Image 1 (cartoon, helix red, strand yellow):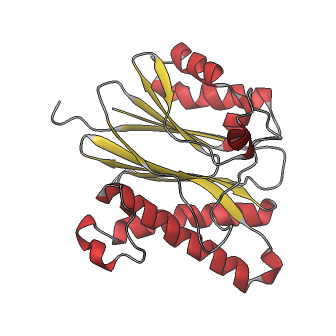
Image 2 (cartoon, one colour):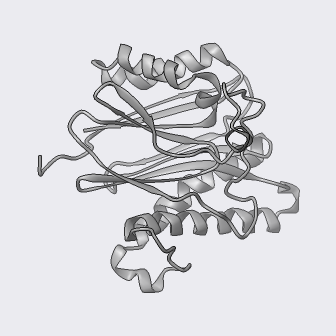
Image 3 (cartoon, one colour):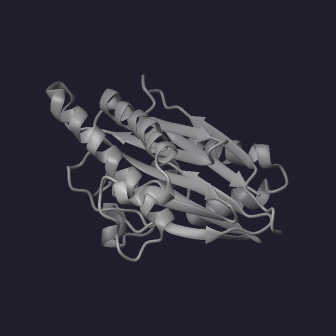
Length: 248
């Protein structure tokens, strides 16, 4: 148990009929950094913001250590661990980059993205999000939502979820000052699955449908994300859909 780690990763993406997929992903298995971003602001602007998130978040995490917090570009947030604050800094820094790009290129207009990032450390995973991408934990047959959407639907507590109501109220690129939901840390156990999803999948499949797909394909890890994306794409073919699963 002392050597337990997240060793497997599976990714699936479904593109819509649009000319540009506004979802983006980044997987760095060596640094154990995983990012799913969901762009907004029109195809070109949304895809650019998502790509920037997938570039700058890992770049910050790879160049910044927990032992150098005195030189971090923002003040640490009380109540968060060092690891949670590290992800918090990465999101704030990336937000600044996206805002700066939009301001310096007036033709870009409003551009931004929802994002979720996972940093895997010995024995635990740290997750942070902005907007309406989500993280789940699947443990012993039960699916638990780990993050809280920053969306109109969540704010109004509208259920079942309607894709027209799943509008992000917060996102990278919204404004220079960014409020970020508190990151979360989870110690992992044998056979845990951590699941990162873009809003297209959340719009298409309910909590129960996601759990059913995982239960159905639990013994075929490499098919898990494919089955989730195919089910979501069948339900709502006009959404970009991304699913990324990490496992011990």
